[in-house]
Image 1 (cartoon, rainbow, N blue to C red):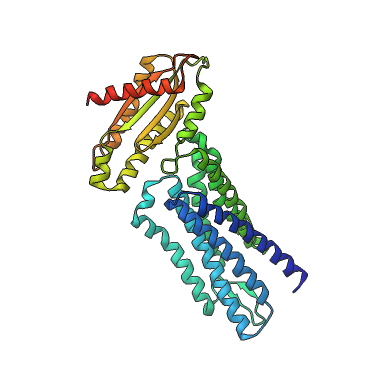
Image 2 (cartoon, rainbow, N blue to C red):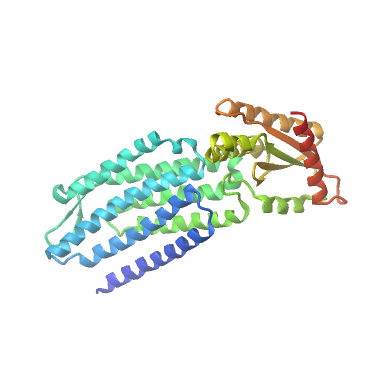
Length: 377
């Protein structure tokens, strides 16, 4: 084995080991949601890219029929996996950003068309040499329309970068800025290196950049799982307690501290009559409303558990609290018109009374206000 090939093998095996460690942690620690299952597939596909590329490097230059056949298999697998990987990453970002159209089969079918065209061109290259060809001395060479393959990969990757990257500049997603940057990097970085490789003929740095990008995403997700509800992507109960502990008894120029308790009316009926999938959709809709109404105002939003949400805001007086409550209900009413069931919230709130009050006291008063609100319905 040449010194170059040995060094290349060491780098590839190191990247595979890093991905394997992340994959094991992903499968044992994160909740099994659809987007996390897709992320598992992404990790496995990147590992397979290194395997096929390494095997291809090992057999190149050996002009035996068996070695040439192995090189064909590796080239087809490597090129096809890149396409599937780019598509799966686009899906992962769509699910993670909770874009509803990603659940539509027709949308996925349309997005699959470039991928299927690319795979067909790759397979036909065995005889036609369109995307790649194998020389008589068993070296993989780019085909006559290799640029089409690059264009398809970049279509998915730059689409990913655009979808995730645009949220970096939207104010209501400010708290998720680092995650969206990480998600966008998994599209933009490989696309950049794909184009660079096309013009320079260097090694597959695009694959190395994928490892760096998914590592960034993995670390962001692991960090968020400590403090984030996996379904709604809001702060969880623990993070709410930490935030309130830091705010209780403090004086603020913005006004008094208000704790809101929000509850989805007849949520059990939604689950029983329409299924748990629609129940989850209702919770995600409520979360989206809270992000839209409260995010730009800098209020703290969390899911307490089940169908209960919390909102913490610093407001000048009770009239401002009522105005915020009305704004939430108005936005919920707009969303309700598009749903097959009635979506309505009961909202109670209480203001902090200073340093002598405990967190438990504040919650009890907010809950009492919620029960009074429910009694009116």
